[in-house]
Image: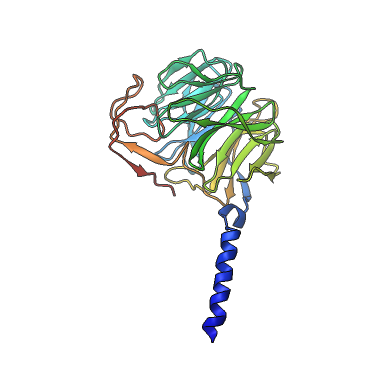
Length: 337
């Protein structure tokens, strides 16, 4: 009978799928296409980040913080007295901008008012927020440290790191890790993040990444890495491969997936720092065949929390801002286009 022939075949297919499970990464290898200049006329852009209301923020070696609309039109939001490296956007809308040579982090309001957020960080190069606890972490490149700057002071949480640069956070197998680009070692390492706020020992995640600088995960768990004029990807199994040699990649220092109204999470933006440490002039974008991961961690937004930080108002909704409170009314999944 037909059923006698079909059933064994179906069983064989099911067993094959169990033995060799399909994965999004395996079925759809990372691919970068359609490179084009998004914005030009910049002065050494080194990092970029998106606001929740749909603006692209870009820092520069001249101390300018620029804000761009999806159509590429831009304005100077603020100017500070230091060259800017890493930038990130807090949940309350303020921008944090790290100054490697000034050993300080600036805070810029949505209206463009600038003030010093924290001083005494040895070369703050990249800044990241955690979603779960609302901690703000910065890589202190010249000091060789990862510091917690949540409350406006610099607390060393990971010492003895060889020139840490770009940062990323991802959960894997029920464990949460902080990923760190070690530029001089051309490596990416990671540290397990524990619920009590401490970190585990350093683990090598990938090597052979020339002057690894900026990091960004996609939703499938692939890690995009820029540095040394290269755009590479670390696959979920740890394999490193060159993603593109497009001539528009001009020693990009950082990258970010599109976020917010008017932007696509399948487009990636590169800050072209330039080979002479700040002679780059543009931001480039390209199409990517995986969506960008939610910023920092699991993509959940705390709601109805209160703030213990003197730098933020109370009862601020957060997506990784400087908030850490015992009460929590609930979570909701962030909308990602």
